[in-house]
Length: 322
Image 1 (cartoon, rainbow, N blue to C red):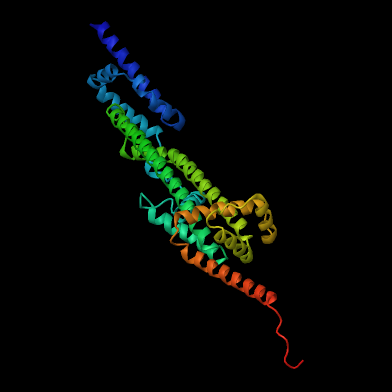
Image 2 (cartoon, helix red, strand yellow):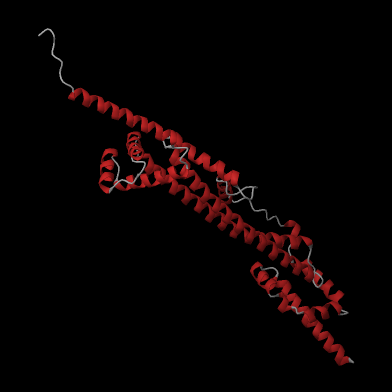
């Protein structure tokens, strides 16, 4: 009988010291996270059941409460209010300003508004409306893709954070049956987990802002190149385009001549005609008025040349005074 009591007391003391060891590990955050991950292996179901049903459990719980009162920190005195990170605030403001972050999941109206505002300055600075419309559509599409990727990754992040936090809360509540764990301690651990996860969210916002900046830089560079086209150069290129509307594909020799007249490169001439053909095919009705203007101008020039030729070829009438 004494041997059985001694064996029971010995096993109970082992459980007691194992939990005390865990109590000490709680004071170190890194070890605490490691212990949370392996808690199922540390206290198997049979051992937890044996501890919960043991007749000395109330005594053990009381001892742990006394140890905690002597060694543990007062959770009420801990004020761990981290001020907002200025970098995160800047990232949030940029994502909202670009229409990437916001309450609207689809973000169609937000992206459209941001795109219109981004290209309004270019139109006022002398960019052609046709080029602005084409760029706005392309920019809007790319920005919508960035927004979709951002919200997809954000949903994954929030789901992972919720699942891990819920797992830790359940473990702490289960362990509170064997050792004293207050609700404030659980709340504090949730805050620690959220701070750990916030670094992942910051990286997501940083990479998204970088993608938006690269996108804006690319379109701004393209817009600057287009601004090198003077009004006279655009007139010359449009005149050739509409005068050869049946086959608006200038030869290399013609491209070189147009490049000299417009003071631009041959590659820029080729790009201009390629973009012009695409825009014209997409919206022929829109360009009918512009085509009519150049047709009328070409007709007037042709009539003027014909009039000059007829005057040069007509015979001179003798003067009656001679």
